[in-house]
Image (cartoon, rainbow, N blue to C red; front, side, top):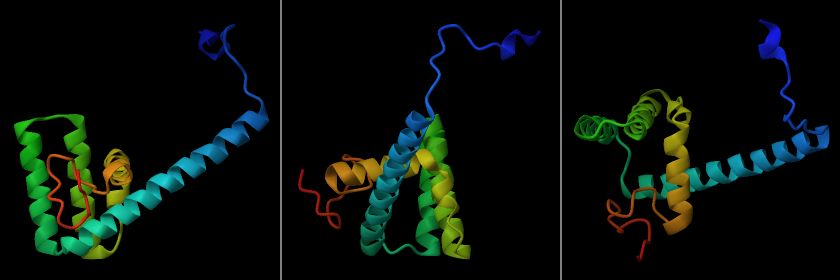
Length: 130
C-alpha cells in the first residue's frame, strides 16, 4: 500500500538551483502572456467598445458556438466571455481565470496583432495586414 510513496528508480531529482531557474522562466513566460493579453484586449476594446450589451452578446455567441461544436476550448471561451461580462458589471476580472483563452488571445496578438482568429479578424482595429 505504501508503494505509491516510493520514488521510482528512473526519477530525476532536481537541484534547488534548477527549480529556481525554472520559476524565473515561468514568471517571465507568464508576464509575457499577461502583457500581450492586456495589449491585445486594449486594442480590441478600443475598437469594439465593451458595453454590458456587447459583452452579453459575446457570451451568447460563445454559447452558440459551443452548441454547434461542443469542445473544451469553447467552454473556456464561454468562461472568458462570462468573466468579461462580470468584469463590466463589477470590476472583478474573473475573465483572467479562463487561462486557456487568455493564453490563446495573447499568442494571437503576439503573432499577428489581433486577439481573434485569422478567419474572424476583421482587420479594422488591430492593424492586421495578412
